[in-house]
Each structure stands twice: as structure tokens, then as C-alpha cells.
Length: 117
Image 1 (cartoon, rainbow, N blue to C red):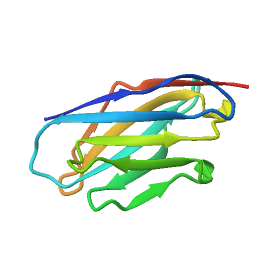
Image 2: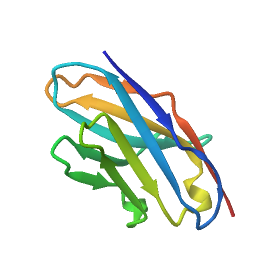
Image 3: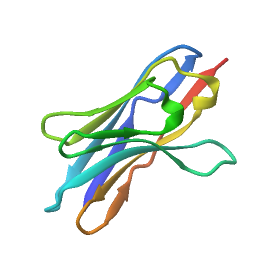
């Protein structure tokens, strides 16, 4: 079983920066992909970025070079550095970890990001 805890959300003005963290605990024998998703009020949850165990990354088109996903050496913490934030980035941000082999998925509880224009 994997437990994910997000942190780092908050309120910033447009153009500001935040760094979100996703701390994973628990263990399963697996190769993971960790991703960030976000959900604004009244909208569906959508993909933001992911990082594989080998460090390869992928981003949603709307990121436009503003966000960067990374992980620590133990791969137990994944970060999302968000720069040049826009009002439309306002959402609850969720961390997800997927076992590549089995497809098992775990979600965190989310952290709120609010960007004022």
C-alpha cells in the first residue's frame, strides 16, 4: 500500500511561484510513474505532468515551460515547481502514483493552489 501526501499549495498573485511536494510512504515491489493532476471547481480532473522512475518527464500542453516536475534521489518525494502562475492555474492539485506493471493507482488528498489576477 502506498500513501501520498501533498503539500506546498497556497495563494499567490499572478506571476508568482509555488513548489508542490508529494511525499510517498509505504512500499510495494513496483516501478512507479508519479503524476500531478488538477481539478478546478466545476471542471474535470486533468493531467499536468508526470515523471517516471528513470526520470523521464511529460507535460500537458498548457504548462508551456512554466512548470517542472522532479523527484529526490530516493524517489519518495516528487516536486512540481510552478512559475509564472496564471489565474487559470487555480485548482486543487493532486498527486498520483501508478505501478507500471500492475496498473494499481494511488491518489493523495490534494493541495489547493489559488492564483489571484
